Image: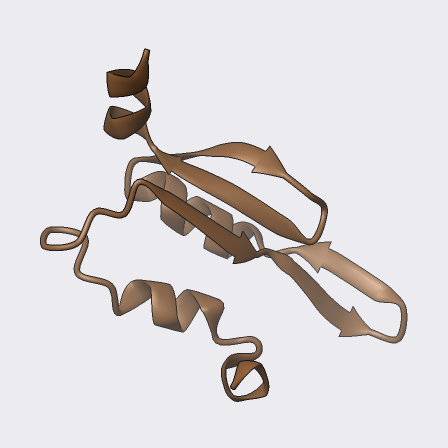
Length: 76
């Protein structure tokens, strides 16, 4: 199924109703392949999650882990 959604991460993320569903963590592939051996981070996707009150908890180069701000504060 991955090949069916490849490159559609932002469009899929925009379909989430964040008023109804508030996952505490997302792990999203944020590395885009733009050519042969050329890669760039998908800043638009990262900015989208930040705008939904998530922050970048960690980055594995290929994937970015986003945590919901208010859920993370509750753990402290």
